[in-house]
Amino acid sequence: MISITKFTNTVLTVLILMTGFLTAACSATQAQKAGVDSDTAIEDPLEDMNRVTFAVNDAVDRAVVEPVARGYRAAVPKPLRTGLRNFLRNLHTPINALNQLLQGDIEGFAGDISRAAMNTTIGIGGLIDVAADTGLEYEYEDFGQTLAVWGVGHGPYLVLPVWGPSSFRDATGLLVDTFADPVRLYLYNTDQEEWYYARAAAAGLDRREELLDAIDDLRKNSFDYYAALRSAYVQKREAMVRDEDGDAPSIPDYDSED
Image (tube, rainbow, N blue to C red; front, side, top):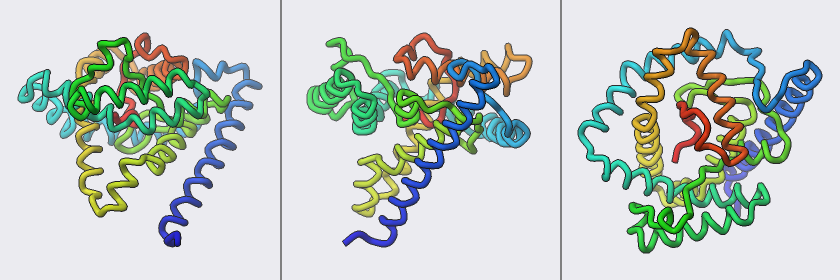
């Protein structure tokens, strides 16, 4: 029998998904009518609110997150940091594979399954990315990208507390991926929630360390850091949808946890 909590979570997920579809679709239509290319631009009607959230995020980052990330880089040898990154990416495989399937990318789905099988066994639980040596490179996928493949536009730009740059579409994708994550479901259903939060913290630390140099450069060379980050975010997300992430600017996209 389904518990009230699980039923409520399911209903909430469906409602969030429906809202994201409607909002993003309406916004995309409005942008097209206004002559805006939805692939390379994004509307920011909530800019005043977004800038406040952005300022708080930036202050917390400078005071706490960045120093911790720099300490992590200085104290932990690169091979160990790489091992943690590989392990976190391996844990993200179920979400990756499911989104590949939803996007109709059967080759990508098969690649994710093959990567997970090789890295989990030969790669010692995913610590070593042996699959990359065979040509199966890691490719991050999320439900925001899936919505984009289905033709859903960004919707308004949105700066989320902690996570940072996003949009109505990508925030919807973040919530759906979070609810659907098999790792989270397993840990919650076995009363091991603390491991889920530990994983999230490790993923955030790994991501921030990876972006130390890129964010430094953006801060130093941007006349308006907020606007520069917004532009870079849109370019990066578009590149990810087209499977060209390697050519996109690397920016703090905090929904890309793993």
